[in-house]
Image 1 (cartoon, rainbow, N blue to C red):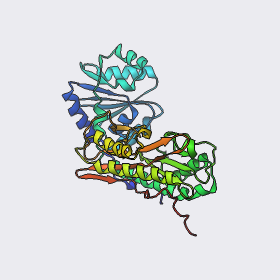
Image 2 (tube, rainbow, N blue to C red):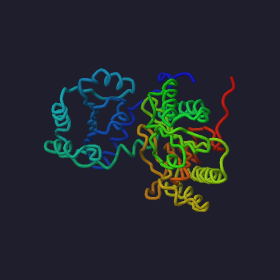
Image 3 (cartoon, one colour):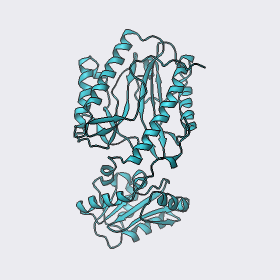
Image 4 (cartoon, one colour):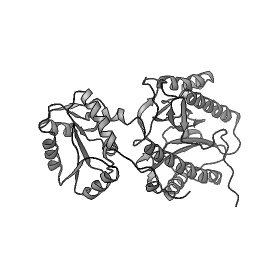
Length: 376
């Protein structure tokens, strides 16, 4: 695969996003919003540094950062057509003073309580009349535009290319860490900024049964289940996919569990559409596994939103009854896990459409058998 050239992807344009947030601010009774979550800062401005605050009012948008990022901030706000100013300060105290100045004269100032430490909140509250904002950005970010989808599609393609290259090597008795390292190296060679998250490679009767296992020096051998959860990061946007392989011929029990999880995932995917309930999607997967006698081994939710964060709204689980909307991107990833006999998970990334969904991932999943080695 030719390495990613971000300039060939549709440009990210953030200007309409400020208008969207201003509308929800007004509905929430806020006349200013202090944004501290870096993913929200990036969504609002395009700025990708590690220290940034956005102050949004009814007629201004200001990004406040430190001296490491002044030029970068100007370049990134220009590239995304952000309509706002960049202010650079040297110290935490100076940044705090600037936030106080930018919010002066406003009486209802929302702040992201879940993204500020108690010390940060207290220091700001001494000088600004803060109130927790009702997750305005979290909600606004759920629907992805064409430029966001293009980056996630490219990230998914990169991860699939890496997995297609690496999967045949599983028969060579590599360690889990070897497989992780090869996947992440190949994703970077294809132009990814890096892995989307800590790549999961879990093998054998114990480690494949740990949903978020960290790869170690265990060697992958004949008869193993191997769960590989892999994604790439492209221009800030994530992909997410899981496939399970069996090394050698699957046993009847391995085949039964794989087919049950695949059937559950297909049932969940069939339930995904605009207007559907997240609980209904989770229930579609869970009911089928219950029917196959494996429901007690499905120990996590069915899926989650993906975008600038690897886990974001909406969540597909039995405790989050939310209505899915066109343009959202979610995973569908049922799994069964039993230490001593292994685990199986199958995950795809899809964008929700009016009448169903479109999958961003397409790696084969009809069988747990490994793909053939490419011929030379």
